[in-house]
Length: 457
Image (tube, helix red, strand yellow):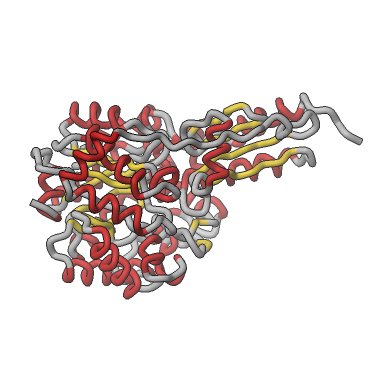
């Protein structure tokens, strides 16, 4: 059993001979073709060629058509900023800046903008690979609502919940339409990718996310397809609420222990997937590191309901040899036995000397992210810091983003004792963990540190 048949069995929680392997190939497919991300994401044929090349190299059981959470937002009027090595990022919010009103927004048709590009690519990829489980990724209702409203949504959850409900209802309609388009084009699995749900508490999740996501998952099921709920960031507090939304699968990144996810999903009889480390292992590790990581995840996940996958969208420059190593170990039980016998060897990371990094005359804000250009929670956290610093207006505040796609970022993360992403540290103190703070609270925290500083004339 392999490919589509194996993924279906795992999602239906049948015991299988091995875990299915589903690499989340997005911009990395452009890397396989020698293209920058902008060129790749804008072209139907490049998306087709990239997926086919990834299937040839990585021997997966399932694969996404592409990984881009800005497709719907762009069609709906959000301005996007293109990047050379990441998916584009949303940089304007039409419901916040007044350029559009909610009643002006219509559900986009299949022929709109890059929706047409991706759906045409989906049909071609499926035709060429009928035995591979093809994943269509839609932007989750809460993340799409945040694209439209910007960070104002966090205040409006309390100040105007009725309006937020209307926006969520609209985003749910968009999600159901996108699900239809993907299923009609040949997708076997529709993944609702909603990274921003890691930024809210369980009570807000139950009120503003659960009813809308549950409606989308029910719709996907009625259409005869399987579903997955993707989240990144430290959404540990919301995993049980995600299970109650009744997807067929939940997929997480390294911020959430795989053991915890398994326990919750077993309780609700839902399949689960993840959570290979994106940067410290897949991006900058060795092929041997990647094999060990895959083995560890498979040992925890077991052979009932588990799908092996990266924690999220693969960094574009992930070495091909690292992913090929995972594909090799997945299909070779002898190698698995050899690795188990050798045991896992921890990779040492040299900590930074921060003795002179913090000073008594300047507030230093360190934001530890995956990459704000390609990770929505990271992007909005950086924007929150930027706006707060701008409003305070003091010259002696400095903020820096440390991307753990780079070794320096991993060193800073470990040196500051940060465990989850994204996280805001002020003067070396961990202040906000995997949650975007309200602007007033963030300004107050910064000001407290500012009040302790010596004024230099």
